Image (cartoon, rainbow, N blue to C red; front, side, top):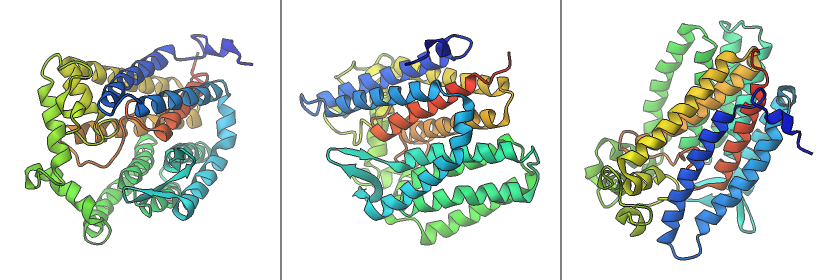
Length: 365
């Protein structure tokens, strides 16, 4: 039985939930539009509905738990995430060069989506147990090692976009707890060095092409630069009010690859225009503001770190996806939270949102 009293205004952030539902609804309309060009089966639309329903079940379960449940579960979640990432390297399916999915029947699950939540919970647990002695080297480098274990497993898939998200969660939380500046600066310099070495020895040719295409899309307009070029055409052709749902030439005629996932933002721009995009951006801005407000109202380090970690994850995903659609950042395959088609991502996003709502009950009165 669900205790509906836990969804009262005192225990539940209704504005946050409503905003997320509106964001999801806007994405669902865009996915329906994309599906129209694929025939009458509406495959992506149906999968998104199923993922939403499962996600809502996970959301309700998490939102009705006490924050102490997730505190106790944090270490287990991290270990399970690590085992899943190891397992997917051995038993997983390879899609577009990445071995990152468990497939069974007609269903698939991407464990890195759960790993993002596992890392947030584990880092929050460590933060809560360190007695606010965040200037210590043991804290900084200990959390770095904990994070790098999962990041390394994801890089082996290889999934650069998800690895960046996991790294962002750790680094964002280090900034949040005000770790020693010398460590922060040292990490940035080390990151620059690793980037140079990674370009030479780690990145695959197709990943290098994405970066080069970001710098100069016209270098290969019919090859690696095709996606970015078509995304920019789609956004620009929408003008003020858009072409209307189902009438976008780039998405309906399939000029825009991966329209339902990586470039769903461009679909919205083409079919709903500048007004539609501004509405979506305002919704995301309000969502992020609600997260920040919750963080400042919390009186528990674990709960605050969890909510801030979720904020970092959603914000970086949003920034990377929108930046790629506008030609401002390389295309890394990062989905737009609550908008892009993707069962694993959608379910885990709602699960994480449920955890955030559970933390709301720790707010100061």
